[in-house]
Every structure is written in structure tokens, then in C-alpha cells.
Image (cartoon, rainbow, N blue to C red; front, side, top):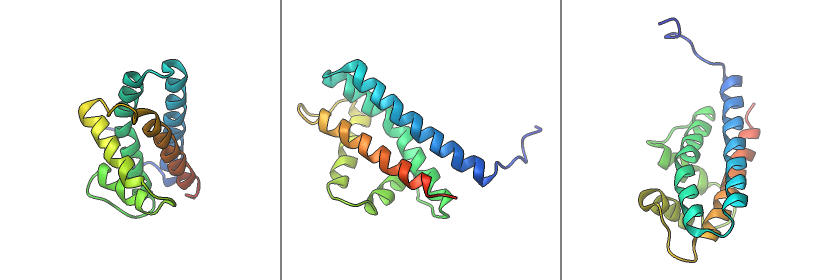
Amino acid sequence: NPFADYQPSRQALVHRLKQTLLNLSLRLRESYVLQGASEAGMARTIAENVGPLRASAAALLDLRGDRAGSPKQALQKIVESLPGDNWSELLARLSMAREKRALPQGEVGDTFMRLQELTSHLRAEAEKLA
């Protein structure tokens, strides 16, 4: 395998993380516009985007020289350093959406907006990487 020993540069990894988070943010916005007030559709979108967000959190920690046991724990670790509160409540909702592909009536809109906010925080943290 000619790529067995290939190691991407830190700069390439940072660029890829920034690109991934930007794409995630754009997909969330697009989904919101296309689905409107459909709670079922928004819940599916939340569920589908939790994995990439967790993977991005793990990549961010790795680029900072830190680690977590899993991508889920990486997101938890990053959330603990964010300003504001109710982040742990959001993480619980994200896990519920991922596992059940649904959220309780009336929580979808707020969860969707908070997911957008969390994605923006991760993008800002990625921008700080050199």
C-alpha cells in the first residue's frame, strides 16, 4: 500500500477540520430551510449530524494535544469549557435524538438551534488552531 506510511500535515488536518465544521453548519442551515417547522424532519437531521459533530470534537482535541476515550466523551469535554450553561442538557438531547431518531414534542426546535450554536463554537475553536 503506497499510503501506509503517509501522515497528513498538521496544517492539512486543521484545514480538514475547519472544512468539516463549515460543511456541517451549512448542511444544518440548508436542512432548516428545506424542512421548515417539520419536527420529525428536524429530529432526523439532528440525529444524522451528532456523529460528525462528535468526530469533529475528537479531532479538535487531538489537534490540541488532548484526548478523550470516545468522540462522545470528546464533545462532552469541549462542552465543559464553553461559556454558558445547559450544555449538558443539550448533549443529553443529542444522544436521545441519535439513539431514538426522535425528541419529545416541543424540544426539537430549541435543540436544533442549540446544535447550530454548538457547531459555531467548535468552528471558532478550530479557527484558533495554528
